[in-house]
Image (cartoon, rainbow over all chains, first blue to last red):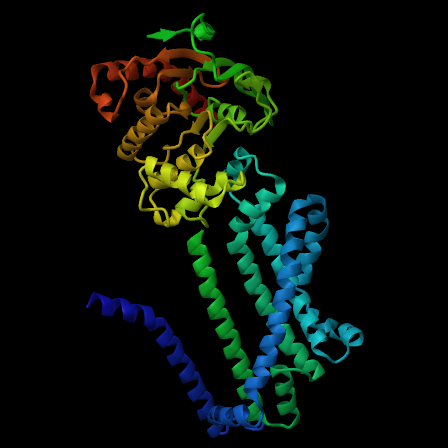
Amino acid sequence: MRAMAASSARFLPAAFGLFCLLCGVAIVEGMLRAGLLNRFIVPLPTEVIDSFGRLFGDEQLLARFLTTVQETFYAMAILAVIGIPVGTLLYQVPVLRKATETWISALASAPIVLMYPLFLVIFGRSPATIIVMGVIAGLPPLILKTIEGLSGTRQSLINVGRSFRLTRVQMLTKIMLPAALPTIFVGLRLALIFALINIVGVEFLINFGGLGQLINDLAERYDMPGMYATIVFVILVSVLFFFVTERLERWLRRMS
Amino acid sequence: MNQTPQSTAPMAGQLPHVLSADNVTKKFDTAEGPLVAVDNISFDVRPGEFLSVIGPSGCGKSTLFNIIGGLTPDHDGTITVDGEVVRGPHPSIGMVFQEESTFPWRTVIDNVCFPLEIANVPKAERLDKARHFINLVGLSGFENRHPSELSGGMRQRVAIARTLVSQPKILLMDEPFAALDEQTRLLLGDKVLQIQQELKQTTLLITHNITEAVQLSDRILVMTYRPGKLKRIVDIDLPRPRTSDVVSSPAFGAYVAKIWGDLREEASRGMAESERAR
């Protein structure tokens, strides 16, 4: 009985959220069918749902999705290789940190996607442009969170390292980076979201690659149900990424 | 029963000192001017001795702990270990901190292995040693747990085992049981006594808890409130081996009353000063 109550308490918010979403969809469907909304601009939700089958078949939605995932993966790998060491370096050199932290924070809130013509000139209409744009968008949050994580290392842990006469490198690798890992992971999660937004955005703008290009193609063909279905798919991908990384982060937090 | 601070010089025939503090003074610059946290403190620690430093909050106990541990090098006077001046963290001094200091990302055994890993001890040997000290602190069976799965008292025992595994000459502890309830504290006191008796471990404990100090110590250094000076040294002449049962003896009560008599004046002064500062 108690287990049932706990189970319902756990799933009730999600069920209520889904119910609200379905109500919203039903209201839009009703308004479109009643002529209150223009069907040339907003397709019927049922048409959007129907178009998923053809998107997977004719438009190779899965292959497009995998292209975007691959670009995101490369961007994340580059981000981790650059962002964490840069954050660590800025933490270790206070002058450098003070000189750059404000700029990095400003960059985190800037519309970096507008820089795409520059990289289009440098790398051409290629995955490199898309990946670089993803990397640039994800760098600021990752660098800032790495600095925050290292700065937040508990003094008692640092004192343990000092009492065992750790070298500077040992202090960093054996104590500070592991202690900062949960916060660095938050940075990686934010970087992933920023990178994904920019990757799909640049794919759309340069009409190349995965899901962004598909949205562009469908918009140009005026396939409104297909375009909306792809946008819904991108949102679902974001939700999936968010869910997986949130679980990972919770696990990391529990460990610390 | 007690000595004046001046009587700490080694007498002929006594064991040599393993640690000596000589005229240690530490001043901090504050907005209100220089603050003397530790004022001209001198004492010696004999091999195998359990020595406690007790004083009211704010008397500079933790500052003294950091100075002895080599974490605060900028001070006057000298700390020597076997005649060698301590200028930073010393291999002969193992420290246990008041705050939670186990590594949350490591299991119990990996925490205890840490100093051996740093010293590049082969894996099989360090696991053997770690298991021995985990057993010594009574945590056998918890080797693969993470600190988050342990109680506060168990985590402090992990920290003690991690320090002991590096086999320091002097175990230096700063109020390791301050965050624990009284019963757990007494039981952990038993464990510390057992370890100290088994290893003949020279131990220097910083504490503000009178019963803890009397339960564990051979000698107690009583400090004054700011500036932290040495007020008195009390020899604890209770039989060893000891357990927490000693707290019910009349002699124990007499020592507690005596030390409280010394501390009451200092603690009152500290309380009055902190109330004035508000």
